[in-house]
Length: 377
Length: 138
Image (cartoon, rainbow over all chains, first blue to last red; front, top):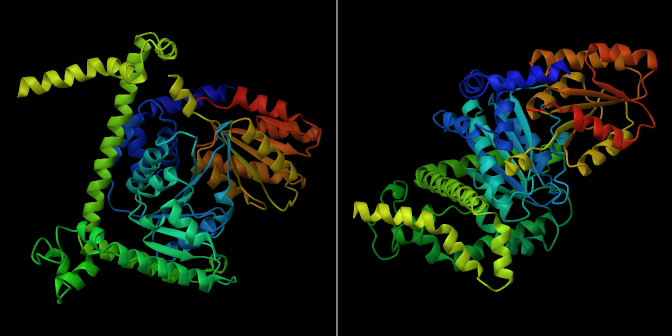
């Protein structure tokens, strides 16, 4: 048991600067420990992530999502192998659901990561959703930063595409691939889940199975339909009135577009999701998939979309942190006022209502903000 | 602070090492650990010691449980210990062995750094309790 206390001492003494310098120096253990602290929201993790930020920005991040059994882990394994063949280092974050009842989880994605075992330049980390809404996407994004700062060239985020939580997770990626198993009906289900909007590349995996052609066809129709229905929305994202005022901010995006802006410019500015067929177990189509990733990367870089996405991401990150911090602050206020129980009692007894309670608890914060506004104004 | 504690979950790697295809026990343990609220990473079958070390280091597990029914524990376990030491991960990883281990080998394994050996017939609750009590606090 002396080992335990010793381990604790080492971990404590290692806190911010040394752990980060070890990570930057390429120490795998330090990288693993930083991700653990990020996951656990361990004391001091914020300083760690802050210290990481300036070292990030070099990795290309790919998100892979899809229904359970669609072959995500196998495909990620093959992608990692292909990247390694190109001498690129790889980080993988595999997110699996956890039980909402016990918090326990079996994280099985690692089993499929067989092509690159023994190669420390592929760093695979399993993360469980831990049932904490919203927190997962923050933790994943922070873990991506750790891998990025460590110097990984390519980072893959793998997650079950089963809801908003997971969709938020892959938002940390520059390029998102959605896996669709070949069987009828799934494409319609995807429309419901709103996954169409996040896919930059559709991967029809298990393309050797019956129904693959049909799935490809359905996807193609869906993408075309989207383009038809959404011309205004599509154009709106890239400056006002693509059709009417030709020179309005369309110049940067149109270096390659010699034609008229209302047609070519509109198409250039909006990425049309590609469809790639793969058989991940045999590694077929993985090259095509990498080409699609590269094409998307070039496209977003050329159209200025990459910069736009980065800015949006950081804005969202700041807002999320503020929401969390403000919520924590208010939680303290609730504690100070004797806990949530008494307020609930009053609400149940119809003495007050939730809105009034919220107003009351928010009072000190609001006063402070308003006072500041007055002082400055 | 209670919110912080909720975030913390014991992470375990349940691993099968070497040429041993009997994974029923490992599956049972993995499920029991999951139901106990642990995060379990399962290695899959036929892993080499270095693969297990790689997984344990990258996943930063608190507990490494190795299932061996082949009788090769005297060769394989020291290699795992060595690997963990190489990455500085040995000190704060609780190393457990489960499977058919003769009594005379148990002491030797413990001397090498295995915290406990769980033989056939061990109650799941006993193993879970042991992990709860001995998992390194970080």
